[in-house]
Image (cartoon, rainbow, N blue to C red; front, side, top):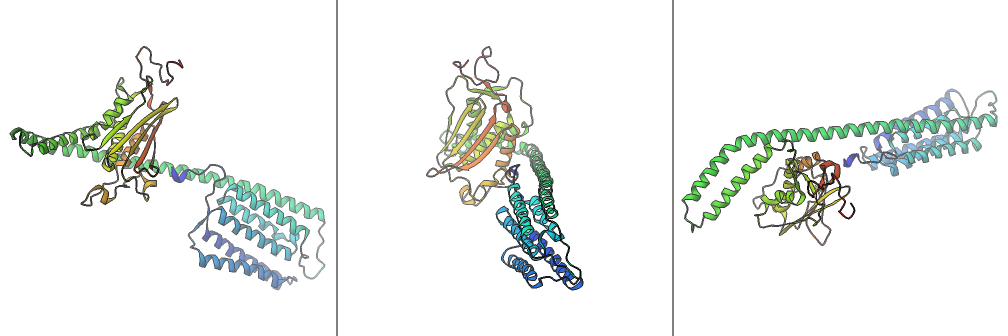
Length: 450
């Protein structure tokens, strides 16, 4: 799934700007309250002006972000990381003015690291944790005296301060790793649920379409039979030189094709016959045969190899490939090409046409239901367009056989669409095209290799 294809290690879910702004407002409120209480209520001698200046800088940053950017914007590592690094440096400035490691608020170094661990990549969290540890060490060595009121300020030994720094370092590493691991597991679970919901949604769409297809086959069967009967009578009553005979013959052939399509739709759920296997070239010929009489050249290129694949004649596979070929014929200017190639690991079929190609705005969503690449001015001068179900049905049916599909446009100066359908060897139970007594199971090796 494209949206779920992030790496399982070091991936970033990002952080909403609104979340960071709200957390910084909370920090500003807490810092301001602590400064007021310590200075006015407890009577400690604080450098209040420099401390309020550091807090005011956070206020200005929040106001700037609020005005400049939309709150719903999701920030990646490149934007969220520096904002959290600023929070570490701003806390370092306050601690430098108020006693350094002697200040009990030194534990707030954990906050930016935990925030990073829940939404950013592991590498960003490591860098942020290293910055917090380095800043804590710096204020442990260089800081203004700890503010105190009344009695002389307590003197903490250097060994104790070193222990505070070591414990803070361990806490940053342990809590950061634990928070990142918990968040990563939650992301993996969310990805799995999203993938499951996507599969279920696609299956629901296909099940609904299966029901519509069955209903259509039932409802259209009688009128198609009537049309076929009337056309047959019209054809019999016409003279060989009648100018409309060719049109009537074409109408009869298209009515027959409609009946064949409806019969195919009703057979998609049928299982494969035990011995219903055919060479790849014959299977492709069967796929393209209904689409040859539309003025478009369809070329099938299959390597002349004695070990050509022999695969099961799967109705879903034939109908799915046929749907792709039909779309290529609809949009091709003159020619459609089908290339087949295989290897010891699998089978690949590539469809090319010389039409306008896929519309850029939908190429990433092709295969989803009700998404069509058919521009109105391309398909029909009257402005009619498809429902966007052809690619969805074809993709779903082919994926049921184990195939993977990719959609792209041909590289300029060539024009047209390029569709690649590939199967692993085990998915189709491919055999080689040899006599029954000499067939080597699922192998691809040539006689020389044998």
